[in-house]
Image 1 (cartoon, rainbow, N blue to C red):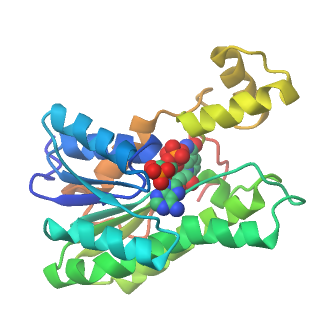
Image 2 (cartoon, rainbow, N blue to C red; image 1 turned 135 degrees about the vertical axis):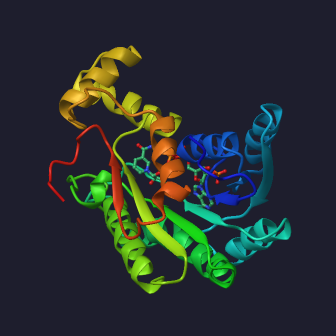
Image 3 (cartoon, helix red, strand yellow; image 1 turned 30 degrees about the vertical axis):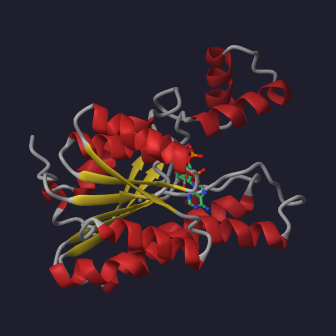
Amino acid sequence: MDLQLQGKRALITGSSAGLGEAIAIMLADEGATVIIHGRNPERAAAVASSICKRGGLAEVAIGDLSTDTGADEVGQSALAGGPVDILVNNAGAYEHFNWTTALPAQWLKTYETNVLSGVRMIQRLLPQMRARKWGRIITIGGGLATQPVSGHPEYSATLSARHNLAVSLARELKGSGVTSNVVAPGAIRVKAVEDLLIAAAPKYGWGTSWEEIEKGAVADIVQNDIGRLGKPEEIAGAVAYLVSSYADYISGATIRVDGGTVRTVA
Ligand SMILES: NC(=O)c1ccc[n+]([C@@H]2O[C@H](COP(=O)([O-])OP(=O)(O)OC[C@H]3O[C@@H](n4cnc5c(N)ncnc54)[C@H](OP(=O)(O)O)[C@@H]3O)[C@@H](O)[C@H]2O)c1
């Protein structure tokens, strides 16, 4: 199958680690030039270099997307090498707050990092996609957007906002040749999630090996039909499909990649 990504340029925000890194590797393997982004230059450069070593094309853009100036820097770096055809709004952060500890300042910070980060990049990159009459904007959402739990409410709310804005954007893009869609992961095994689960293990009595912790987490907090956490490349596969020509007729949609964690029909 040829996803027809040869010659396309893709900015994947937050691709210096985790899901973004896996998405960047897959899009580069499919022939796209990928722009690796994060706040930490060394980590981003290491991912870009590993992609180049496997024969891919990778550039780097650095900046804090929770600020306008950081987003300006990222937009300028990304566009310096040519137009950007594909924007994957993936950068984001999640921490362990609850209804007592998540104070308004934390809600605002999380909104800046997880929602306005994506809005900023859309506003900087969409005009040139519209002008060229082709583009793909993917928003990484999550199961907590539609099925929140009691913990980290400030984070779940940002996922809902991401899902919502991506559909609004799809309507705005009517007839433009640019589409907007969501990929909604369940709990995916990246280092940040491993760290959270390892820290939670004593409270739940899951044991100490990763196998015990994953089994306990699936039983107690991320119940799903497949019986494990997801893999980053399973998210990358959904993104690769949505940015390919096979998804020309899809806009305003959500693909869940969560093993069946979210239980609703729609
Ligand atoms: N993993 C999951 O189970 C899961 C499930 C649902 C949704 N998600 C969403 O998927 C996205 C990626 O998550 P992940 O698990 O891969 O997390 P991760 O491993 O912690 O990676 C987060 C990435 O975002 C970047 N980043 C964080 N804050 C930033 C900021 N203010 N400005 C610019 N870049 C920033 C980080 O780079 P630097 O640290 O270098 O800045 C890093 O590259 C997040 O938006 C998350 O909400 C993840």
